[in-house]
Length: 285
Image (cartoon, rainbow, N blue to C red; front, side):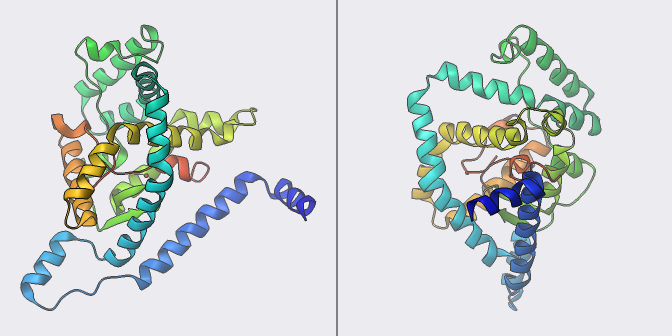
């Protein structure tokens, strides 16, 4: 049996297997969507509140949210706590700086697509300065007064006037909406490491997206798990609180507010890491 599985895997290739699994997951989500829509209330006031929340898939979203929280409680959070305990701040900050540096092409492209020339200059300057002076592991640009900022194609679409659409809770990836989910996928094509992985002869290169995504998720959770625990304890409806926080943070990011780069405390992984061959901050309403 083991030999047969090995021959089968070699025949179709791991890439095809991942793609098939990703398509299967998307098909399953579509099927769940068809069966999990919330029924709009008849009362006018309740109907207005229902439309304002814009969460027609709430029954399905809550189920996925519970799954995500299970994964977070028994896997992601314990690993994040161990990561924080084992590695000193210097090491963890270097990991974060390295991951941020790798995101520069995506951020720069979205800066330019939004017409944010000054922010694009900051992004390019940060990359050059941090790469040459900080070796990609340190952040002398921030010390010089050029702060890091996030940009993604979901934000770009919002600047272009695209509505966010209904709220979505994605397995593993966390809070999103239709616009931002499409943006996550599009950003994969702006990331040069994607093409490096596809054309590299190294055996581990095809898993580089997954490795980077998991590393980023663990690093982020190591920095905000106390926030999440406090939020859980004080929230009457944690799902609704997370939904609200996500929307507030996305709004802050789209408007380039100064508080935008403080991630809301919610477990997530990058969408690139989950569908790394097929081209998910974190808390919300």
